[in-house]
Length: 89
Image 1 (tube, one colour):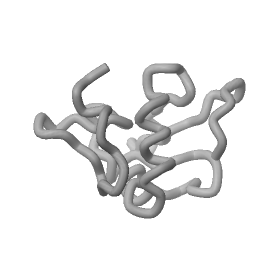
Image 2 (cartoon, helix red, strand yellow):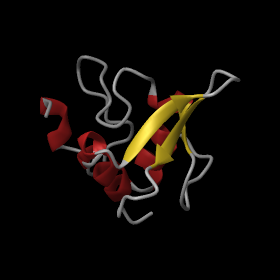
Image 3 (spheres, helix red, strand yellow):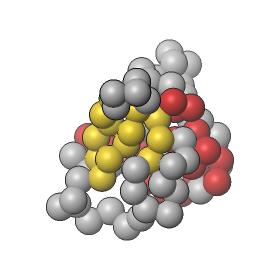
């Protein structure tokens, strides 16, 4: 795990000092939209501001296969939930 995954609560768009997001990696959080749950259609950055606890859970689960980011034909990015995962959303 990277050093950036330790402090999420209360931050908005927790990109660390090297520009990496704990949720989206090198992709800007403003350009990745959730495709599941109550925040469907909101950017990861918006979720960080609206619900820092949920954002922190996304960051903690990044390496566990709970979700993935896919680029769409219209060149937007979507964060998808693995249908077999057990993350509450």
